[in-house]
Image 1: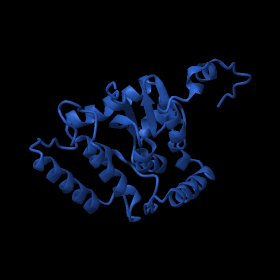
Image 2 (image 1 turned 180 degrees about the vertical axis):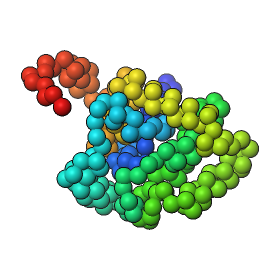
Image 3 (image 1 turned 180 degrees about the horizontal axis):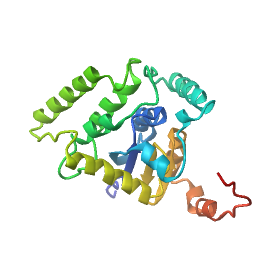
Amino acid sequence: MGETAEPALHEIRFFYDPISPYAYLAFERLPETLMGHSAHIRYQPVLFAALLKAHGQLGPAEIPGKREWTYRQASWLAQHHGVPLELPSEHPFNPLALLRLGLCCASAEAPGETSRWVAEQLMHHVWRGGHSATDPQRLADLQARLQDHMAQRDRSWLAPESDAVKLRLRSNTDQALALGLFGVPSLVLGERVFWGQDALPMLRACLDGDVWFDGSAWGAASQLPTGVQRIP
């Protein structure tokens, strides 16, 4: 009998901003989505607001009506999938401090990436407990926890306001824009982008070898002519 072939290792880039409840839900559900597959996940924080600005868009939480729906849907999805979620005491908020804290923990080999553990700390800071994401004491506690994590691994700590950390975040956001990303979460597998937590079943189907992905439908979506275009 021949040797069993090793499963293919899939590299997936997970672009996220902890300000997004959908990024949090996708983060929590990703391990289940990937079950049975071998994958290396590269967690890359980006500034969601910069993606929106580049595309001339507002975020869901900036649009009356859609804002309320976003919180209702995220809360329902969380209970539906068994994911703990408590809305923060105010939202939206400025996530820069969180994003920079996460990238203080990036390694020299992968300066734009956070480990899953670090990403989890950022996500839980926002979406667990119903507290303020920008409370100075909570941010100080988070920083102390992350610094301790780095010290245990004998890694140097960069100050959140350092030019190096700011450059890491800017570079990640520029990479996202170069890939055509317009929102978070975005999961990039090869040349394909899967946007939103509701795209996880689609990502799973692609990993499973769904024949749909061998056809023309994926590419055809970008070739559909525009019938009318509104002028803002």
